[in-house]
Image 1 (tube, helix red, strand yellow):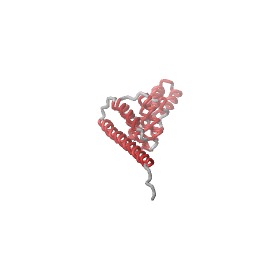
Image 2 (image 1 turned 180 degrees about the vertical axis):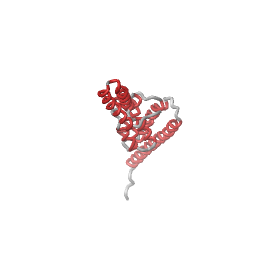
Image 3 (image 1 turned 120 degrees about the vertical axis):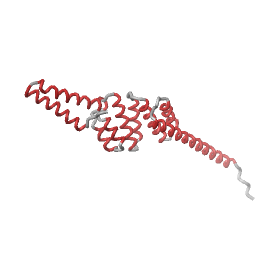
Image 4 (image 1 turned 90 degrees about the vertical axis):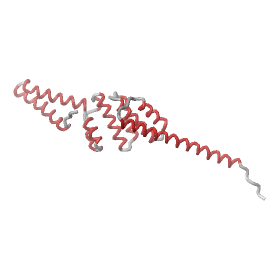
Length: 204
């Protein structure tokens, strides 16, 4: 998709609106109207699309500092087009997780869930990220719920399918480890109970 550099967009908006207004005042309204209209169209595009697409590109390149700065140039997520708003929250959540801030990451991802996410692939990505968060907290049951939600979607991306399989194995491992720990705890309790009931031999 063709995109205009955000700084170039700002410059064109200023030239269109300010320059068009000056032309209108000097030569008449219709001389400056095309410039004013072009500047207004670019301004509306910036407000409803934000800097989400360029921020997503920077995040794919692995430059989280530039991603955060670029996303910060979005005027406000509340005015974004619905799908762009969802992507905005997803990027914010991914950045928070990259910075080891799981609580903020979870909050942003849940905000993305509340918005209309465009495709099942994106919905599955959110579910998997939430499942990973719960798994990192040792909450296997909650992680399984998110994984189940992801598996119920029509996922077409092979990488997402692979992530589902890996996460499923990881959650199974968590469950098995929890069961072993529980059995180990019960065994230790039984041993302690047996020792307490065992009579000491008489001293001669």
